[in-house]
Length: 69
Image 1 (cartoon, rainbow, N blue to C red):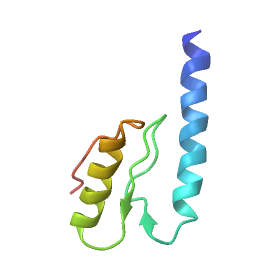
Image 2 (image 1 turned 180 degrees about the horizontal axis):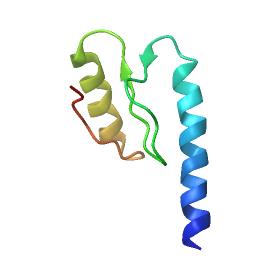
Image 3 (image 1 turned 90 degrees about the horizontal axis):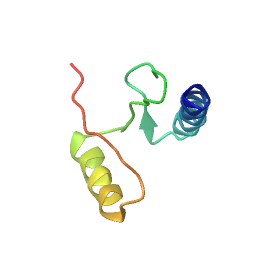
């Protein structure tokens, strides 16, 4: 059902967030909300943009670029 689907997505986001937090190459600039995890590579934004492009090419994950002010 829908509630179980949302809960599963939220749990997966929590798990992904823990992986990102434990990798010193990444940072989390915004608080996780439900299934949304905002992350970036430390350093210039072009690094994160290049990773996003490579992941999109593979077609296995769906990532959304964002700008945080």
